[in-house]
Length: 127
Image (cartoon, rainbow, N blue to C red):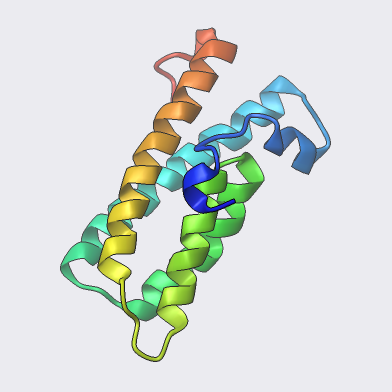
């Protein structure tokens, strides 16, 4: 399955990773992830202007596991692709991958926010 076929957000993944379906625990992990996702998107915007391959590789390495753990499977796969591109002797395609990641990040954030609003309506506006 290529990254385009993977979901933006799989709401069952984090429960499997944590072996828990405790709502407060899940909500706290998702809210932390959304904060990290926002920070990652800001870093990617900066890297559109000045690409530092080592920084992008580190960001991708750190974020791919977090994304997959919370169920952002497409984002995790695309971060892995960015990391692989950055490891090449002559990295090709970084700019295109950043654009893809920005789009996927926006869609992942929207999907996760929608899910949180559905399952935790009292928290609307507190993220």
